[in-house]
Image 1 (cartoon, rainbow, N blue to C red):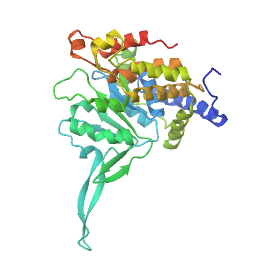
Image 2: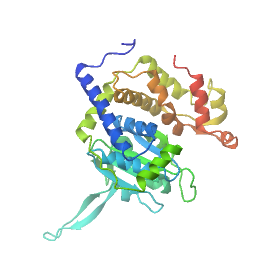
Image 3: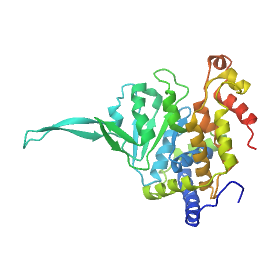
Image 4: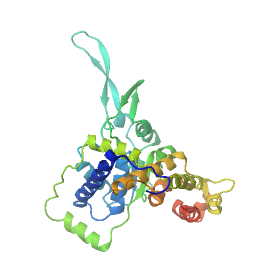
Length: 336
């Protein structure tokens, strides 16, 4: 056992091994439908086990929606999909109160009709196609796992996760996600084109034969148990401090890296460090390891930080994105 890490309890050791088996089983089921994209699948499952929301970014046709739906099909979880459009209203997501009359007494009362957000997994498809007002309907649910309507709090059943998709190449009729909304997402996950061999396999699978039947691998109780185990996975002090140093290095100001001072309007907040450490713990758990370390934090740095680092006008004029800035941050902030 490395210095700075406390050993995990004996009962949790069995849960770690069970979680690793469950991860392999879920990934295998998803692989029946989704060709390639293994890194994306891994991040999706890390988010699931660490109670994190995910924003999937990619051009049309890369199976973003299909991936999330396939995950839901492998789990005994409630699943709702909302197609975000410019005319979508907040009540179309959270629900609304309707006035009903009791024909026996003549008394009128308000009854709350739940919206699609009352589920385990909510797919917000093309989330940037609706107005900021409607996007904001997700803020409380994503942070507090409850919805307040008419002064009454309605808790959401655990586990509750929001997975959203976004098309980066279509700008007409879209609305940029506010920074407060982006910060609620644990990961921004960029999906790229498949390789030539993978594309051949995709065409073969999707143009012939019946779709594969997927087995249900996990139920809500087991998922909640694994999520609680993630919190108990120890993390080395050096890894925790490294996560904080990485996040702080993205903020412009006195002592900041030249690239950050020159190109960043503002950097990541404390929630980013929390997500780095939680994600590192979940990554270790799914790998069957009893503690999280520096490599786990570093592996998740880009998907955790990229959507939280906002570049300035100078960077945009020079074609510098958050990815280039973070590459310099990762190079400068050593793990030792």
